[in-house]
Length: 369
Ligand SMILES: Cc1cc2nc3c(=O)[nH]c(=O)nc-3n(C[C@H](O)[C@H](O)[C@H](O)COP(=O)(O)OP(=O)(O)OC[C@H]3O[C@@H](n4cnc5c(N)ncnc54)[C@H](O)[C@@H]3O)c2cc1C
Image (cartoon, rainbow, N blue to C red; front, side):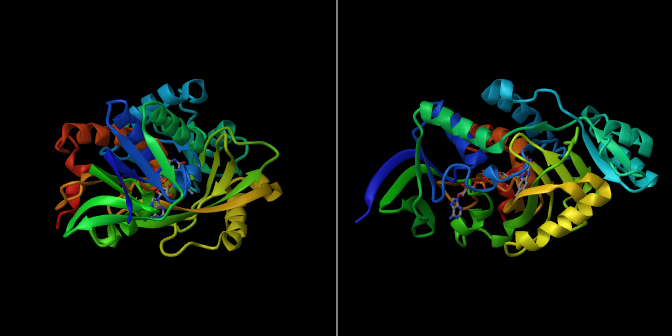
C-alpha cells in the first residue's frame, strides 16, 4: 500500500525549468515537492554548453531578456552581465551579409557582417578566409550552478526535493491525479511536468509523442593552447535555431563556458548517438574553422538530448483536457537562455489558477487537435 503524501503542487523533473518553477512557487507560499528519478541537473541542464544566448525568435525574445535579469539576481557576480559577443561563421560574403540581414530583425543584437580580416581581428583563432557575422549576445555560465542555485533558493523557501526513485503518473479514469514515486504516492491540485526530453514518456499517451522529441547533441570537451575570445558558431546552425530547420547534422561550434571548452555539436534525431565515433568527425570539422583544434587535448565526450518541441518553442501551461496536469518543457537548445523566465511565467499562472496570460505561441493550448 503506497504511502500517501499531499502537496499543493508536484513538479516532475529537477532541471533548470523544474527547479526555477519550484522557487517561484515556494516563495509565494505554495507547498511544492520536486520529484526526479535521477537527481538535480541530471538531464540537459547539467550537460550543456552554458551559453545564455538570444533565441533569435520574437516569440521568446522577452523570455530571454527576463532570464538574463533573473540569472543576474540568482548568480550575482558569477553572471557576466555584459554579452561577450558571438561570431557566426560562414565561408563567403553573401552568407555573412544574409546573416546580417536576418538578425537585423533584432536591433539589440547589432548584427554586422565582418570580412576575413575583421573576423580574424575579432577572433585570432579563426582560419584565414572565413567571413563572420557578429551579434551582441552571449553570457557564459556554469549550467549546473544555475540549476542548483534555483534548487537551493526553492529549498530555502520550503520546497522539498525527493530524488532517485522510478516515477509514473497516477490516473483516475482519464484524469491525472498524482504521481507514484518509489513506495510513495504524491497527490496535488497541480502536477507540473518539467521532464525535458523525457516529458512525453512521462505523459505516457496523454499527448502525442512527437510534440517533444530528443535532438541529440554530442560535444567534445577540450583544452586548447589559446582559448577563443568569443562563442563561435557556424552560421547555418544559428539560422537553424531561428527557423527551426536543422540544415547540417553536425554544425561547428566552439563554446567556452566556465564548465568546459567544447567543440560541437551534433543535431541528431532518433536514438542516442555514439559519442566516441562522432568525436573525431567533430574535431576534424572544427579544424576547418579553428586550425589549433588539431592540437586539442580531449578531456571528455558528452552526448545529451535537447528537448525539442514540434515547432521549436516551449510548451507552457495546462495540458488540454486535464484538470490538474500542467507542462513546462520543450525548450530545445535554449533552456538555459529562456528557461528561468518560462518557469516564472508558469508559476504565476499556477498561482492565478489559469494560463490565460501565456501567449498562444508558447502555450500548451497548441497541443489541442
Ligand atoms: C549538447 C547541448 C548543449 C546545449 N547548450 C545550450 C546552451 O548553450 N544554452 C542554452 O540555453 N541551452 C542549451 N542547451 C539546452 C538546455 O540544456 C535545455 O534546453 C535545458 O537544460 C532543458 O531544461 P529542462 O529543465 O527542461 O530539462 P532537463 O534539464 O533535461 O531536466 C529534466 C529532468 O527530468 C528528469 N526526469 C523526470 N522524469 C524522468 C523520466 N521518467 N525519465 C527520465 N528523466 C526524467 C530528468 O532526470 C531531468 O533531471 C543545450 C543542450 C544540449 C543537449
